[in-house]
Length: 105
Image (tube, rainbow, N blue to C red; front, side, top):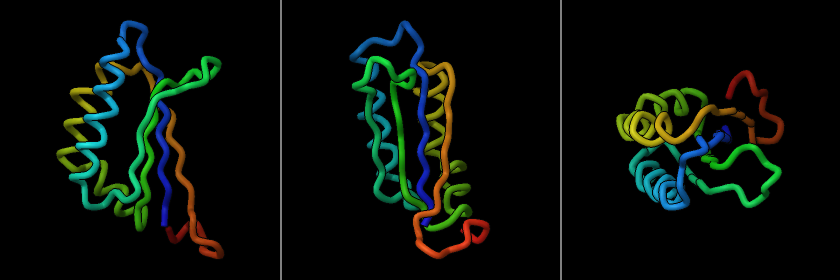
Protein backbone atom coordinates (compact mmCIF):
# COMPACT_ATOMS: atom_id res chain seq x y z
CA UNK A 1 0.00 0.00 0.00
CA UNK A 2 1.34 3.41 -0.98
CA UNK A 3 0.44 6.60 0.88
CA UNK A 4 0.52 9.82 -1.17
CA UNK A 5 0.71 13.28 0.38
CA UNK A 6 0.72 16.56 -1.56
CA UNK A 7 1.31 19.91 0.18
CA UNK A 8 0.35 23.09 -1.67
CA UNK A 9 1.39 26.71 -1.24
CA UNK A 10 -1.69 28.89 -1.62
CA UNK A 11 -1.47 32.09 -3.68
CA UNK A 12 -1.93 35.24 -1.62
CA UNK A 13 -5.16 36.39 -3.24
CA UNK A 14 -7.01 33.17 -2.28
CA UNK A 15 -9.88 33.89 0.11
CA UNK A 16 -11.09 31.71 2.98
CA UNK A 17 -14.21 30.90 0.95
CA UNK A 18 -12.05 29.74 -1.98
CA UNK A 19 -9.97 27.58 0.37
CA UNK A 20 -13.16 26.04 1.77
CA UNK A 21 -14.27 25.40 -1.81
CA UNK A 22 -10.94 23.66 -2.55
CA UNK A 23 -11.58 21.26 0.30
CA UNK A 24 -15.17 20.55 -0.76
CA UNK A 25 -14.29 20.11 -4.44
CA UNK A 26 -11.29 17.89 -3.66
CA UNK A 27 -13.41 15.57 -1.54
CA UNK A 28 -16.13 15.36 -4.18
CA UNK A 29 -13.54 14.73 -6.88
CA UNK A 30 -11.57 12.07 -5.04
CA UNK A 31 -14.61 10.10 -3.96
CA UNK A 32 -15.25 9.54 -7.67
CA UNK A 33 -11.79 8.08 -8.23
CA UNK A 34 -11.81 4.33 -7.58
CA UNK A 35 -8.04 4.06 -7.10
CA UNK A 36 -7.91 6.53 -4.17
CA UNK A 37 -8.67 5.14 -0.70
CA UNK A 38 -8.80 6.93 2.66
CA UNK A 39 -8.71 10.30 0.95
CA UNK A 40 -8.14 13.38 3.10
CA UNK A 41 -7.81 17.08 2.36
CA UNK A 42 -7.64 20.14 4.52
CA UNK A 43 -6.17 23.50 5.32
CA UNK A 44 -3.25 24.57 7.42
CA UNK A 45 -3.90 25.59 11.04
CA UNK A 46 -0.27 26.47 11.86
CA UNK A 47 0.62 30.03 10.77
CA UNK A 48 4.31 29.07 10.61
CA UNK A 49 3.65 26.38 7.98
CA UNK A 50 4.13 27.58 4.40
CA UNK A 51 1.76 25.00 2.92
CA UNK A 52 -1.86 26.10 3.20
CA UNK A 53 -3.61 23.06 1.72
CA UNK A 54 -2.99 19.33 1.53
CA UNK A 55 -4.39 16.20 -0.04
CA UNK A 56 -3.52 12.61 0.84
CA UNK A 57 -4.73 9.16 -0.15
CA UNK A 58 -3.78 5.51 -0.08
CA UNK A 59 -3.20 3.51 -3.26
CA UNK A 60 -2.69 -0.21 -3.73
CA UNK A 61 0.45 0.43 -5.81
CA UNK A 62 2.41 3.06 -7.72
CA UNK A 63 0.55 1.91 -10.83
CA UNK A 64 -2.76 2.81 -9.17
CA UNK A 65 -1.31 6.20 -8.24
CA UNK A 66 -0.34 6.71 -11.90
CA UNK A 67 -3.90 5.80 -12.93
CA UNK A 68 -5.21 8.32 -10.39
CA UNK A 69 -3.03 11.08 -11.87
CA UNK A 70 -4.58 10.37 -15.30
CA UNK A 71 -8.16 10.20 -14.03
CA UNK A 72 -10.38 12.90 -15.64
CA UNK A 73 -11.76 13.92 -12.23
CA UNK A 74 -8.27 14.56 -10.87
CA UNK A 75 -7.18 16.31 -14.10
CA UNK A 76 -10.18 18.63 -13.85
CA UNK A 77 -9.47 19.33 -10.16
CA UNK A 78 -5.86 20.13 -11.04
CA UNK A 79 -6.66 22.47 -13.93
CA UNK A 80 -9.68 24.27 -12.44
CA UNK A 81 -8.70 24.49 -8.78
CA UNK A 82 -5.06 23.69 -8.08
CA UNK A 83 -3.39 25.65 -10.88
CA UNK A 84 -5.52 28.72 -10.15
CA UNK A 85 -5.18 28.84 -6.37
CA UNK A 86 -1.73 27.43 -5.64
CA UNK A 87 1.79 28.51 -6.50
CA UNK A 88 3.66 25.24 -5.91
CA UNK A 89 3.33 21.70 -4.65
CA UNK A 90 5.54 19.30 -2.74
CA UNK A 91 4.68 15.61 -3.01
CA UNK A 92 5.64 12.68 -0.79
CA UNK A 93 5.17 8.95 -1.32
CA UNK A 94 5.44 6.33 1.44
CA UNK A 95 5.21 2.54 1.54
CA UNK A 96 2.92 1.54 4.41
CA UNK A 97 3.27 -2.25 4.37
CA UNK A 98 5.84 -3.48 6.92
CA UNK A 99 8.52 -5.68 5.40
CA UNK A 100 7.60 -4.84 1.80
CA UNK A 101 10.43 -3.64 -0.41
CA UNK A 102 9.45 -0.12 -1.59
CA UNK A 103 10.81 -0.79 -5.09
CA UNK A 104 7.95 -3.28 -5.57
CA UNK A 105 5.25 -0.89 -4.39
